[in-house]
Amino acid sequence: MHVIAITSRDNGFVKELRRLARETNAYRRLGHVWLEGDHLCRAALARGLRPATAVFSESFWPQTPIQWAQAASKIVVLPDALFAEISGLESPAKMGYLLPWSGQDSVLRPGVPTLVLDRVQDAGNVGSMLRSASAFGFQQVLALAGTAALWSQKVLRAGMGAHFGLHLVESAQPQDIAQLQLPVLATSSHQGQFLHQGNLPWPCAWAMGHEGQGVGAEVQALASHWVRIAQPGGEESLNVAAAAAICLHASAVQATPQLG
Image (cartoon, rainbow, N blue to C red; front, side, top):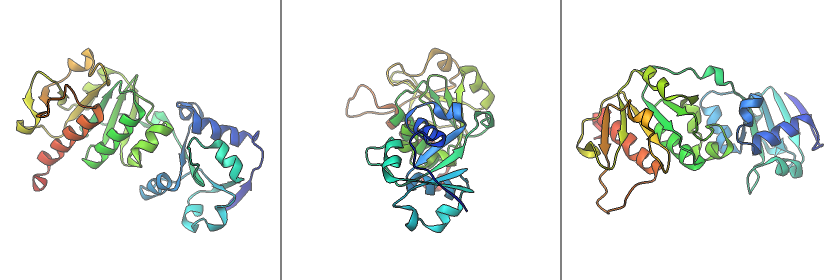
């Protein structure tokens, strides 16, 4: 293992980490994703991913499990105060990984159960929806332009490791949806069968839209199925992440009879 100790906040590597931890789209410019904290790091390793660099705080380094250190070819140790300065968390973690990232690798896969995000802007909602997609057997997420950056720190934390079990495609356009070669399902408050009464196609693509505006007109035009979610309590609408969880679960149950 090659271990490097860095103490200067003006070091180029430290400046890059700071940008990755604090700037939403920095990973697109710098070609790396910053995973802060043992939960995300362990989730990445469990999916067979290998970091380019492992970063540990000075106090944590002596007690670092050997498998966490050996996962990367390069190790950087930072003073605790410097690690805390880089961190975007209220309670800074003691370790992190740098993963290589290339948007060019994210080629859309036809025929794969997919969640389509149409300008969903809240990072917490996006991360939660990725978790639901992974949990319910949707292997791909297609994020249209205007959706929160999938590999931003807030989405990563809300996703809790779901990213590493999904094929993620960003900055897509509505016309790209046709390449999925799948029936497209969307929710509505006034048209279509109730979700619990309908026969849902599988595999399929579920389209979830902007928190305030819903699915845009271009995506609406591509929808082959419209469904309504029964709300006996009488609320006007559901949070988009809650609606996604309900719809994706319904598809998973129908597609896997033993779950029903």
